[in-house]
Length: 187
Length: 257
Image (cartoon, rainbow over all chains, first blue to last red; front, side, top):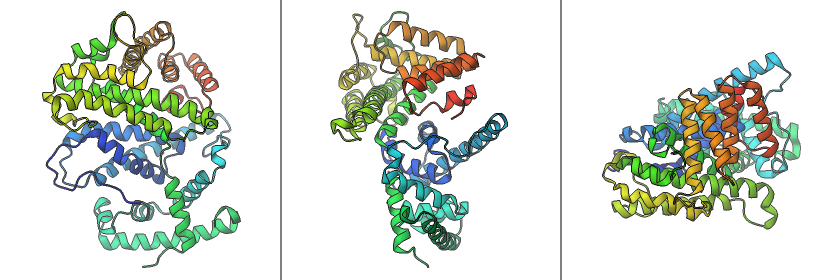
């Protein structure tokens, strides 16, 4: 799944927020989800990202790729949400018996294969070490070249390759465990 | 470099395909972003006047750049909230039996918003239709250009019932909710509640009743009336079961997810 960058680096024309929104919403959503923002908060978190993008779009000078810039914003927002959710859960646990995770009963839609596929992937990603997960998601899901991913994450290219290799190996191991656990649920 | 096995690759590919916002979620996000940008823009021009004409006020009171922003916002609010939330969510939940694709609401939202931007900005600015110029270059826009856009949007979305004063209910509704959100953000929950009360009293068939109900719950909790806020949230849950977007109200009221 390739991420379309609105413009190459060093752009000379102003960015159009509507076009950026249309082009990047999917990427933002997946970044937030892969970073661990709960499904129930993805809409709010996506809104936060685009409100920030709107406020700062005029300052975006094109020194980095648009995707890199938006990725940094999305990661920042994701961390805020994860901290917030974790605080809320601690507070709720102090007052009542509230189970971890999304406590809602599965809806008919959630029974669908699409939702199952999403859940399985998120469960697998959640088990990866965060640094490896970031590289894996950007390379394997977003289709961004490793060299570019290294730039996005401000790491050396060799480090990015190494994390990718470890992430793949970890994911294989976790997937095998899931297959053993869920059988048919995971091919 | 080790590669993923075929089986695991399939899991990743299928999961990634499913990992994205649904059409109705896209529409709700658009609407939310539009409302928040509008509130942050401090658009006094969107404030409802007593018994006034929301759209006309919006144009007359705005700066040139502000009017371009409003064109986009109105397009998003009208198309996103009405087309997306009303069609996408309500029909998406109950109306799937009619065979319409789940993406109908979002598509309608997009169709609704683009012409609005084209009319407001493109016509005066020479930019391509359907694309609103970036806020950075909006300084040369003619206020007159923005005047027609919100009305076009309302008609395009098929949602605005025009009042005898010339503005549409949708314009006024957007103005009330924007005013309430802004008041809430400025720490004036009483003013937010007053705007929402006017929204309730003055609009016979509100298009954004759910958003108003959630804002009211937030305002009540912010005003130190958490019991009433939680009750308002529970009522909203009962009326629109499973509808997302209430995280802020829940957090503020200390209500469980």
